[in-house]
Image (cartoon, rainbow, N blue to C red; front, side, top):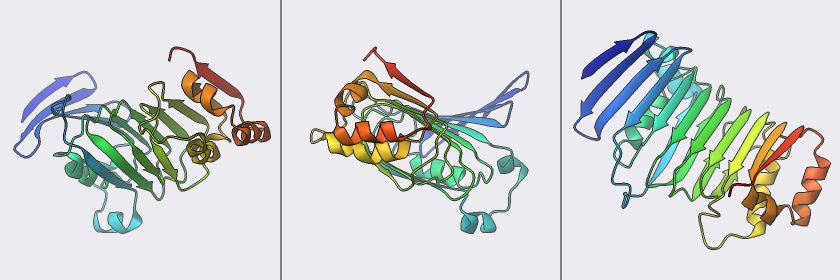
Length: 229
């Protein structure tokens, strides 16, 4: 283990035999960054990933400790098929986690995220092999997604304050149909602020059901369309 310190920030590097190098940064405002060593990005091993947060059954067996109770914002970067189980185990112990960011996980094909209580913000960026996303945190207020458009499987109609779908690269699968967007519309239609990339806007706002949903929603204060893709 290597240790580095700067003002208000602690940095650690762990050399793990199972999944290589892990860099951890403890930042102000209860933030923790975990950067796992990246796998071969050209030909990564594909994997599925299940994350369960704030489960009362789990927390009853793991009483909060100073090392877990302080984390409210967690960034998980470059998780791969070797490190996903270890990452899930760590995340399950953060009983006060409110904000979760998942970034640059090559090989990640399917993901399921559940939270019974506290998770308010979920960000998933730049996971190029993602094809399926199952979302179950029912108190979610912010959802930001950037990457190829996957098969969304939301379990709740969230009252989001801020939603972004940046899928300018198009769908993640060849059998995509306009009706596949309907589940997402039920999730984002009540958002106060909604950002859609140009591709999503042009393809799906032609759909009659989509137009009806947006007209029926009186809560959207602002719709932004990204025209760069």
